Image 1 (cartoon, rainbow, N blue to C red):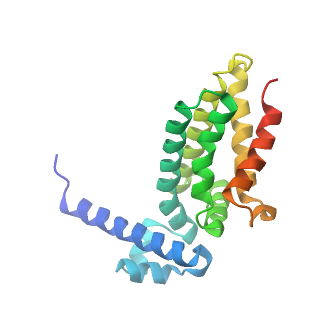
Image 2: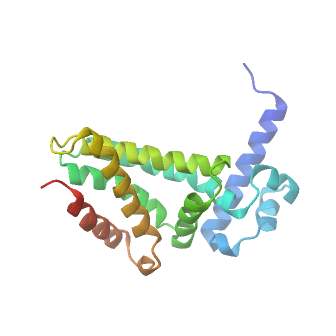
Length: 195
């Protein structure tokens, strides 16, 4: 069934908003960009912008959710080719860390919005769904190890997810590279793994 003009116009506006916000956030960081700048760049009014996202945090989620979902898919694909459980878990985590570190302040703000935002808001619920999918992917890898009980895989995956998010968000880690963040995460995950 063909999409109507109104729906096409809404999608075109959304695409312009995402492109404008993505470019401005990448160039300047989310904290330095105003909603007026995004509306101007997207060639829409601020009132229209607020129909799509009520806050800059929601705009950041709108921009970043797709990138994090792509990072997760890359991690899942990478993990399929890795035989060791720890290495496969790290293969899932790495593209997410890389995505988060492209613009560190934006990455940290994204995590804050995800954790503390309104879970009823659609962009927040999308972000939380990505977290759940990440934990499911990690749990699936952990189940490869016969020593990990079925009931423990989800709990361990939740802990791995928490370790990953804390490592990426912690103020003390702002200056760390992707490799240093990965080493931090690996060191903590190794303690969790059955011996």
